Length: 86
Image 1 (cartoon, rainbow, N blue to C red):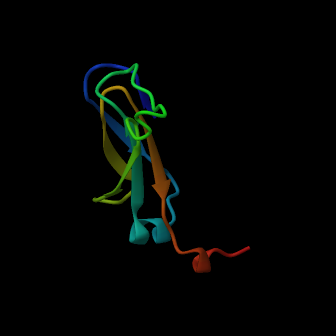
Image 2 (tube, helix red, strand yellow):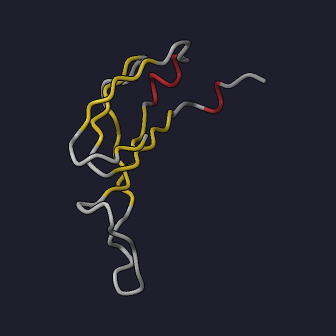
């Protein structure tokens, strides 16, 4: 999800048919952001823009995600691969 704006945005997501194993193991949110939309990494500042990873609480089919200004956000659904049937 991309927030190209200068303000924080709240996004509600509903996932229908969510496997119960996902609800048990949760979500991981990865955000790539900076205070200036024109920031970029360079040889002098190789870590000016780096991904930040965190866990999301209140896991379920309805998710509320806060999007930072000037950000790209990825949501990863985690589940037990041993429970997957071919």
